[in-house]
Length: 212
Image (cartoon, rainbow, N blue to C red; front, side, top):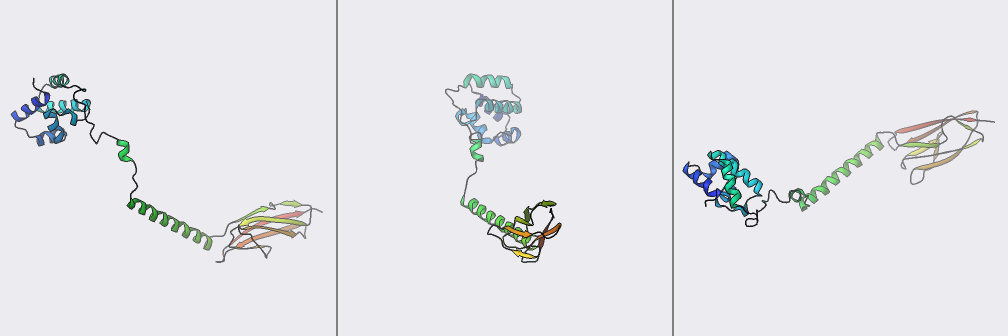
C-alpha cells in the first residue's frame, strides 16, 4: 500500500512541480517536504503539524485532503514512528534564557561605569550650582520657649559651612549639628544658613517667642 508521501510525490512529479515550487507555494521548508515524501516521520514535528503539512500540500496539488489524512492515519503509528521535536519546537524558554558572555560582561561593566560617572557629575553639579541640603529639626517655626536658652539641631551636607545668626557652627562627619543659643527678645528670629565652597546658600528661618 502506498504511503501518503508516495502519493504526494507521484502527483507532484506527474504535474512537473519541483520541491522548491512546493516550498514557495505552501511555505513548508523543502527539507520537511523531503522527509514527508520519504515517510521519515521521526524527523518531522508532532503529528498535528504533519497533518497540516499534508493538507496544505494536498490542497496545492488539488488532491482529496481527507483521503490523504486517512492514508496517513493508517500508516502512522506513534509507537513505530516517534516524532522528532524540531529545534524550533524544543526548549523555547531555554533559547530565550540570558547567556553571559565575556563581551556582555565587559559591556555591563562599561555601562555601570558610565552610569556611575553621570551620577557623580549630577551630584557635583547639584553641589556647585544648586543650594546645599539643609534640614532644621528644632526648633519648629513659631515655637514658644519658656527658657532663655534653646537648642538648634539639624543636618546638612558635611562639606558646607554652617552658621546660625552669622555665627559659624561645627558639623560632625555626617553633617549633623547641635547648638544652644540664647534668646534675648520676646520675638527672636533665628537664621540657619548652609554655604557651599562655590558660594551657593540655603537658608532656613525660625521665629521663636520667649515667654517670661
